[in-house]
Image 1: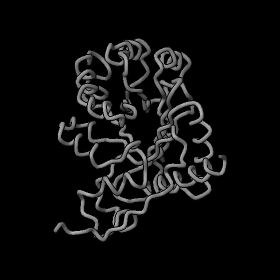
Image 2: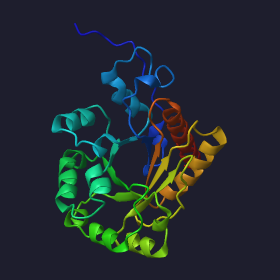
Image 3: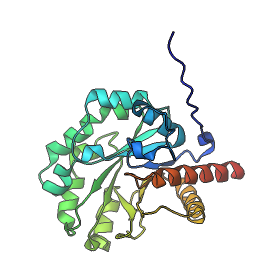
Image 4: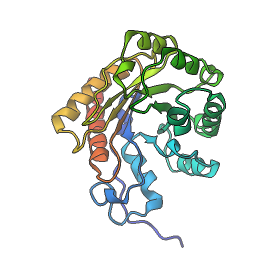
Amino acid sequence: MPRTSKIAVPVPALATAPPRLFVGTSGWAYPSWKPDFYPEELAAKRFLPFYSSQMNSVEVNYTFRQLPSAKALGDWLAATPEGFTFSFKAPQRITHFKRLRDCKNDVAQFVDVLRPVREAGKLGLLLFQLPPNFKADAERLRSFLELPVLNADGAPPIAFEFRHESWFAPEMEAVLREHNAAVCIAESDDLATPEMHTASGHTSFRLRRNGGYKAAELADFAKRFIALSATRDVYVYFKHEDEPSGALDAVAMLKKAAALAKAAQ
């Protein structure tokens, strides 16, 4: 007979969370999250099922360096429940090596690899994170946004994380609005992106402050993101890596949002 697991997987009230609010971290495969997030006895192969019982989205940074295999994608899809979403960071070949220039085939390959996720109804957004020394170039941005694969029927929503201040200008904002592309509103100890919502149906946040966030700040986030999710899909990803503070903050914020949504019913 198969062995029965004794690991309890607590499930928060995600059913009452705003349906257009997707919250998680940028990754899940961190043994160092034990025992504060993952139970000490939880096997690594069960990290994603546990993670997806606590949060309803994840940003996959793995794709920055390597595209996933069909088997890996299939395993991820099978490990997560209906309603869970995966967002993906664009390959560095597109953002850092070619810097959005002459990358039609690279973008097409990236989107095509993720087709199983889209067909499963679990595809979130695609994040194009530009290097800090990449200055604003309106014509290059416009040419990139006009790539056929980004404008085809069913094309995934996209967001840009700009890390040079020159991008935050009216001309760039106009190009993004014209092509329904979002600005990723990023926050870290070294970066604070101005809040602007340039896409009509989605927006993106990356919250990376070291040491995490206080309870009052998470409560403010919950109110703010609930309001935004009334008119658009809102993707919120907390810091990942060695310490579990980002995962704990994401769970706490999502629970606050769920409670607020339930109270408003």
